[in-house]
Image 1 (cartoon, rainbow, N blue to C red):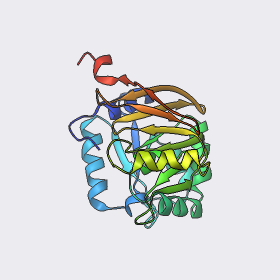
Image 2 (cartoon, rainbow, N blue to C red):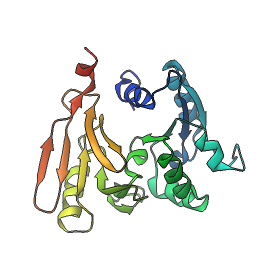
Image 3 (cartoon, helix red, strand yellow):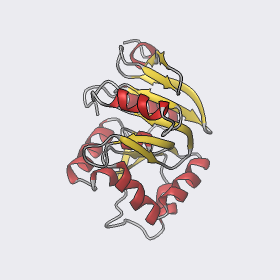
Length: 219
């Protein structure tokens, strides 16, 4: 999302604990757009990783659990979350990703690749609508990305949670990430100095200042 600001990507790579981690891209939310895959390879090669990707239209292996379980990091791109999850469930990736995560593979992503791990997420997968979507449920509650990047996101999420159409959760400005370990929130981090996170329930919205990664790296 930020070609000239790799702080979040560097954080994930560091957390993998290897000099040259194997990072696999899942681009199903974008319809496996070739341009997106190319950008992923360019970015993560420059960051010293060993990139790969998984296609579900031209699968690279008949054993997806084995193919993905060999990786250190699974990186999920943005796009249509509803269509992505439908495809994943047909290929049993919902089960496989949970399995390899328990074995130590890091799961990460942006936009669709961020909300997919929660019980629910706010999505614009249906044109003209911002609505709730039942997701994988690896993480408790709900999540809404692009809190400051798209004008309708914040009021839509507040209204959905207040009306109890969505579970309480977190709204995230662009550049903000939630770091979970074993289903428990460990840190809230950001690649942008002024970006915020918001804990949202039916009663109130509480602003949270993330740890700015630029400061932690002496920038």
